[in-house]
Amino acid sequence: MDANLAGMPQGKELTLARECRGDIERAGAVAEQEFRVPSSLIQKLNSHGLFAMTVPEKFGGGQKPALESLRVIEEISYADSAVGWCGMIYSTTAVLGSFLSERWGQTVYGAQRLGDTYLSPITAGAAAPSGRGERVDGGVRVSGRWAWGSGSHHCDWICGGTLVSQGDDILRFENGEPQVHVMFFHKDQVKLHDNWNPSGLRGTGSVDFEVTEQFVPEGRWTVLGSSRRQIDSPLYRFPFFGFFAAAVASVPLGIARRAVDDFYDLACGTGPVNKTSSIRESSITQLEFGQAEAMVEAARRYLQDVVAQVWDKVVAGESISVADRRHLRLAASQATVMSAAAVDKLYNAAGGAALQGHCPLQKHFRDIHTATQHRMVSPEVLRMAGAARLSEKAVSYQL
Image (cartoon, rainbow, N blue to C red; front, top):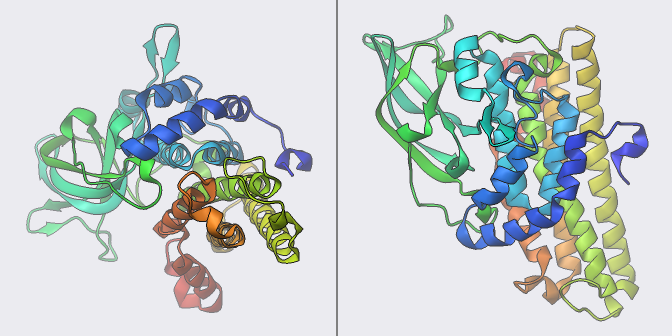
């Protein structure tokens, strides 16, 4: 059942994502073999604005409501997990554009004309503070190597979390915590390593990336937890980490939805793997299928409901509480857990057929268990969110 039945409007980006499903599926098969999504598909989806949904309008982006972007990410992931994962990374990174000054925001995210089309630059990266920088005249000189550079092969700019030294110590907040500067490097400043060969999400191209003694001019960065938003709109007032977690969870939701449909095709003999009709006559299989479908739908509705509730508060100008942030993280992590559990049920119910390379269920199994490893939706977040309610000392956790 589609969320449109709940009265939610359908944006043009979601329609375009569905219209591109065939192209995404074909490109996904290539990405699985080549460890990266073909550039031609990235360019096509970008020309439709599917990677600029969270780019500020003033820079030529879509600046769409949070839930619209999440539904598009899920829809792309339904067609192919790797393409959806890259789209998720591009969309979440683009939110950082709201922290940049007019000058750097326009430089990094300003739409560029390509023939009759305007394309927003693509950004990705890693916020983990694996870089080290030193203050110099006019900016910071940075060296570092970061893991998990998903989709970096197609980026115009790549971000890297950096600890910056000034004098004998790194820059810190008043409480002593290090300041993490997310630096924007132009693609020409970055070296991509050929070291991506995982079991799942193979097409994401999540290679390591590295910079060596690269200069970042003053202000071409944001400081996590400190930089002030330069654009005042509901999208950028929405809790960043809550949106990030919900976006990550939207990929497993797309994978799980597709697994439900692919299992149906398998059981009914209409999919790429011919299975005897006995599988659909089994009462155990029927139970597992019904439970899996219900789990995915419950996970979707829980996540979308929480996002919608917090969005309404943001639009109304209400303050976002620790409880709101906690519910966002709970919903995102639980949606991921339930999606993975549903795929496990379907994979096991398919029996030996799921082991075949041409059976889509084995790919869904590999991909979703790779997605669960992302720290934004790990089971540790469920523990952290539980602790935030049970212990006043835990509310300082970054939710």
